[in-house]
Image (cartoon, rainbow, N blue to C red; front, side, top):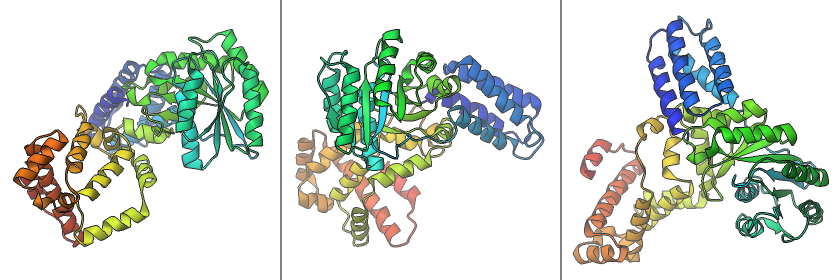
Length: 443
């Protein structure tokens, strides 16, 4: 995400960072490049002007000009201002002390509202342990109710629906009463959208708000539409008060104009971001972490949180035992690989490691390689997976045919696995492996 903007900003700041001292002309030149990068990223021009003025004012201050390592200070200033631009500290929903907390999801057709409803339900169940129900109040779009039933159940939420023949305001009120009687922690109401903002849409939203008295109204916008998303948010803010934004398709947004503009234009922060098609690719929006990723500083905190979510203490203890006893086999390797995949797309994970974003620019990670490795391992017998040294001649041919690959691919996997096991053995014994020699052997 934000690849185009990140590349330009990182290049500009790399030049600034490399200078021993900075002059006012240096700062002005850097601001011109940053201004151009933001405008090309479809950031609102008023926001760009305000942002660059704020950075320039701080960069020309006494703490930077003429000091040692001024470039590092400028980078920090840009990071701070980007964070502030996107909302400052991360926000959470306004949970009611007397459940259920009622959340209305609003937005135009095509913004991903129904899927975002299910994703938010799953997030609240997983992260907060909440019992969640979702209400199908989009009675106009064909198959909208059926879609919510499907994705709502996949998220683990109860789905409240009365078909498409009733008034959505009455459905919302009925759903709230049912959520109260069933002791739900959260009720999320999926409302109807239109192709554009109109009086009918706003009137229906206003009536639903009046009927259910929500604790939060979230506006769902499509990051890929850039300034159109910001314009929609501005129109909603003028007519129907909302509390925060859910930004969908953020993973496909190479520019970042919507995410960088919406808070400054509407005064409402981005609360959540959808970063993929799967229900678990949904997370709280952290402006500081996003700023660091844009500037190539990585996002270690998010990476740690993802790892903690996938961490199984008993499995980790058993893995440690196998490593010490030298019993680590291809079954264990396959399970570790599956755990890494559960963290999310590998390209995205690598981008969270400081400095890796720049190194990976232009490099595409082929996720299908995981599938090929899995097919090879699953084509082996249990004994072969425990003792890959047994795999010779005819066994390699059988495995290659069973996995739809070739003998060379089987040989390469076994060779790489043996090298990895050698490294693990040395680490378990407290010795530092010769990584250079292992990399030469892998070629």
